[in-house]
Length: 198
View 1: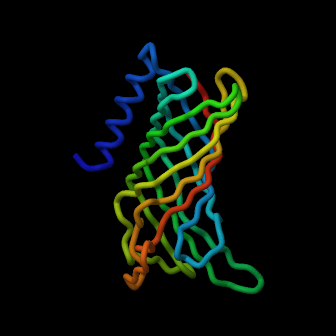
View 2: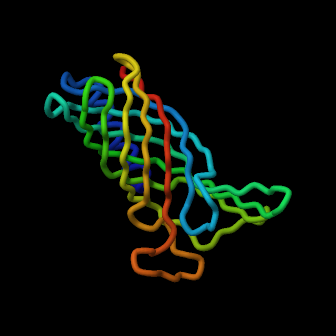
């Protein structure tokens, strides 16, 4: 069984168990990702994508809880031509990503979250000036750190703003060079999602 099947099966089992457990809450989420990748010399985030998935959570105290999510996220980078520069660039990366976050409620409206996520690359496409690129290849996995803020709209609806950055490089630089902590290219994502509690 490959990595994608393993992470999807684990996530679906955990989500389904959580939805029917008495002490667990579950729901669905959907929204937009704005992303860039370091090392492409483009100012970002400049690539919009889809962000959808599901979640389960469980309170461990009155104000703190753990939340697990299984999401589909589109990442990448983009440069469109303009009147001064006709160069183009497009990078599309699609991940299935498993999140494990600690959440802390302060007040009745805001919730702070932080934690890691592990993404499995399911598709990649890269082109520059309409020429398809295949080197260097991307790693199959993306380990990221995340921090975010929830805003409660109602008993069932919440809005989430989240920042995510790769901890490990998702691929080496084109010529393989490294410098101190810079080991290659890293995904950076700012997401805006709506969460609906079932």
